[in-house]
Length: 87
Image 1 (cartoon, rainbow, N blue to C red):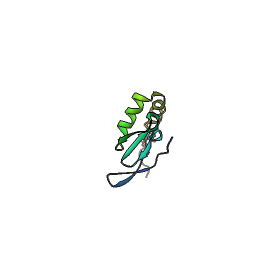
Image 2: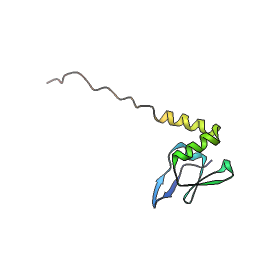
Image 3: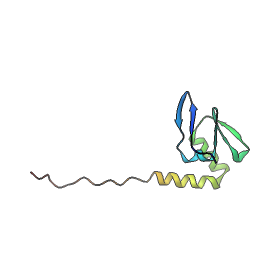
Image 4: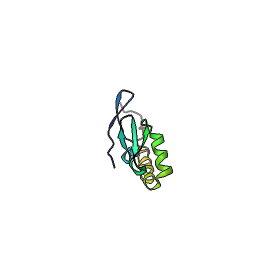
């Protein structure tokens, strides 16, 4: 549905980068779920938005979980060298 965007919360601008926000429309002071007939929810609380998808819209919830798993995979870094420095 909507793209992650910028919203006003507590007088500051913030980018909504969490994958859950693609399923909501951001409105003044909160967000609304177009799948529930435009029911408005107050605030920009990611936890509540994810829980709403999980409970009411399972098909939309699955891709969010997959995206979060993909994001949380650890970054592989090169192991520090154990060789003594050469002079």
